[in-house]
Image (tube, rainbow, N blue to C red; front, side, top):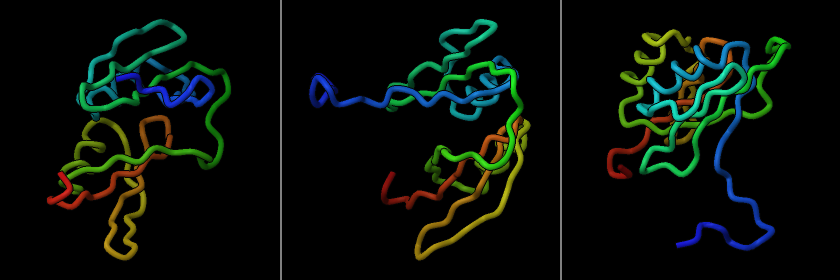
Amino acid sequence: MNPFQGPAIPLLTAVTIDCADPSALGRFWAELLGVEISHESEQWVFLANAPDRKVTLWFQRVPEPKVGKNRVHVDFGVLNLEAAEARVVELGGTLGERHTWQRFEWRICFDPEGNEFDLARVAQDAA
């Protein structure tokens, strides 16, 4: 099946994260997400697509440091929020605030370079 909806409709394939050290950040995310690194150079690190995921992450070296809050962040669903939080810390990331809204619960997290992402608890019956 062709995933494109039309010749002019974009298909999201990757989210690129600007960073100072693509190699180190790529290793953090590869370990956290349980995927391999498919390409690594001085400028770029690409994570491999997992069989059950259509979007991957790429890391691009940039000269300027991160300043302020990300305007875009990625969200990940997890079955065990506490275990995922512990894994973020174990791999060198940090934890921010935990939030709840109606029946949703999530934790703001930061990778080793301070890029924000969310881990959200997924209902067991949704897995």
